Image (cartoon, rainbow, N blue to C red):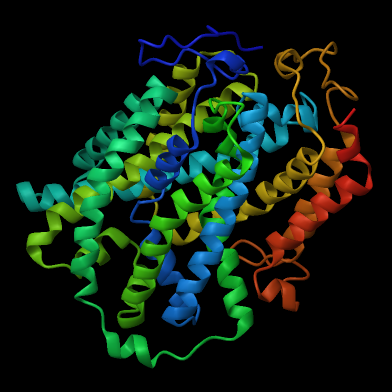
Length: 474
């Protein structure tokens, strides 16, 4: 069991708490803090390629804009619902998940969550390093290619990782403050860049685009949901655990849905506009360079700074949550050291994808999308459990022995684990990607990207039918 100091000094920036539940008297947060956290985490440049992907799939701009609204706001509303559990139990999401799956059965969902966070951090770090390389090429005349300047590439990765570790390592208090104030700075830069990008749009091509069939629109919603809110769902309670018990559930849902929805709708819509006039954006291996090429020379520096800043804000939150997931695995180290381990892993991963691998974005985004299935399966079980469970046993969450109130059968809650595992298998049967094609991938549901919806229905339905949700009230 991980043991750390159980108080967070009000005068100190360093958070010393690990995954143990926050005492009720220390839960003084309010929903606007979460609004800024989710806003900041979603102003990264990666929203533009998401919009370009929608156009590449055949959607018109107006369809892409509607998909952006439904996919991003809807998926982050789910993030807000999960954050209610953090307010109730005062612990990180995957720690609370021990109450649902058992202290040992929870290992599966926790591993998936950790892999997901590490994957997105590698995407963020690699993209940011590309931006820093471009910045060095402008300011110092160096080569902009990663493999042409391996030492500089490693330095760029290290700079980004260092900036990430400083904020994520210090913890919740510093993270909330940085996310709020940095949003204004990098948000303003993004607005300036967006205005310049709008001037490059081929409006004739945008207006001439034909609408796609409804099935493609539905698939687009799934793409956006998987690429935005679904990936954050099991980390949402990590921030809401400091929320006051008096905070209303609706306020938590709104803070996530609106906070993340505003930047995502704007960025995804802008990406679809740009791609409608220039399909090269959707096919670019380095979206940072592709978008930079659309801008006037004088805008390149502020654009690259905004790109790095937005990615940094997203990475802060992801690394913080990954550190908590590492502790939930039962690894007996302090939270700040867990953050350091996480940073080392993503540092090495970024070096591989920038200096060794032949390509990065297509296979890696496919890999990340694969994780949407097990995460959605976890969501179905966890949210169904929340329908009846209003409290969590703090001692039981931290007790990994047979004396835990969440020991169940050998440390595993069989109904929850079975529903989760079954939903994953069924979800993959309806999925198709670069690695495999499921047996049911060519059905209407599979072709329209609804594997994740089926996954949710199976996990939630099976768990409820087995009586798992009713035992939560006991």
